Amino acid sequence: MTNNLIDQSVEQLAPLIKNQTISPVELTKAVFEQAHATEEKVNAYMELYEKQAMESAVHAEKEISQGTYRGMYHGIPMGIKDNIFFKDQVTTMSSKIHKDFVPTYDATVIEKLRNAGVIFTGKLSMHEYAMGITNNNPHYGPVHNPWDLSKVSGGSSGGSGVAVSVGSSVASLGTDTAGSIRIPSALCGTVGLKPTRGRVSTRGVFPLSWTMDHVGPMTKTVKDAAALLEIITGYDEKDPASAQMESGTFVEGITGDVKGLVIGINEEFFFNNIDANIEKIVRKSIDTLVEQGARVEEVKIPSMKDAEWAGFSFSLSEASTYHYNNALIRPEDFGEDIRGLITSGASPASDEYRRALIVREQAQKDFEEIFKKVDVLISPTTPVMPSTIGSDTVDLNGEQVDFMMNIIRLTGPGNLTGLPTLSVPCGLNNGMPVGLQIMGPAFREDLVLNTGYAIEQTNPLQGKKPSLT
Image (cartoon, rainbow, N blue to C red):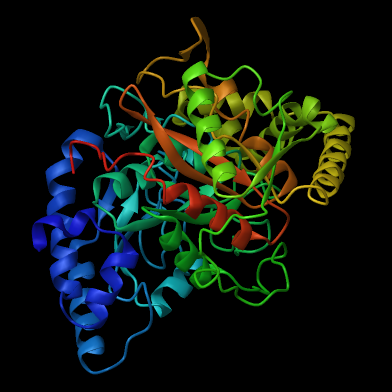
């Protein structure tokens, strides 16, 4: 049993823990064994909390044996992205400047996970300050894609995507400002959900862009993501952006029934200039939904022509505000790519920011109208495959293109609008996973999760996993 525990999802493990077929101690040991076996190759963790985790596992085992079972994530070992605050634990943001930073409180999502009985295995690596999508970290080394160790993991939640993929974390949380949950999920063959803006509190998460930051699940399966979302949702009076909504229930509504579902397809933006193999695989997955009773309708989204520019305007200008003093006093302590981004966004004209606000408002109106006609919008998660570690370019149908500018093209609109967006694996391209993105109306995570589950049930990865598992 121990040898294959790391391959199993939370939905598989939870009933075994509940009925005491396996113990949280046994599972936590297996996860740490896998972490020690894989870390030298993938570099997913910043720090392991082995002693504390084993103590928590013993406590969880005792609670469950005495009849106190807190739910699906009770006794589940999880690593957490290193920009989410743990009280009295070093939280570095994978940076040099904050290498000794110790928060005095838990992030709201950590409080909720503690109450759910989660066992924390450590902090996971990320792109420095979440300001990038390769996870090629100049201070702590790159995170390697477990499907091909020469390729990037995607970022900025690269450590989270890789740890879930190889089984050194059963599930994880990531943060997403332009695709940082969905991109590593797509490149590593896992599930990643960026919830609706305000659905999950960002209190206690080191900010990148206060108007575009999100926190969400990164998991092996859609139901794992739904169950994790149930734990971390809910109104937080300490977060100004928090929506006044009760915690949602999502798992019960996942049936995989898509009969009558109307799928929106936007050719001009979301299917424009896409790797030919990725496009073929995604369209094939859409066809499987049509075979199950869904139908497709083409939609127009005029505001997408300015969406990339507006997204960059928000993220760069807002990030530069946070890092302004350090950029002046100790610029050499930033990685070269981050230093360049902060400098480029340090002095945006107020008129430029105002115009970006107008684009955002129009994009939100466009999508509101679209979702009166269709239920979900489906596209590739990324238009390109992962680049080689150390390279700034990637092949796109025979042409070398800038990796960063292309990899976030299709995920950025979800942050600009704040709409719920899910990435699920939908197939393999030359042995590497491909992600499909599902966007839905505000606070309709249930709809995007159920659509993702329908795709998941077609077994798109054909049971294949990274060799390191």
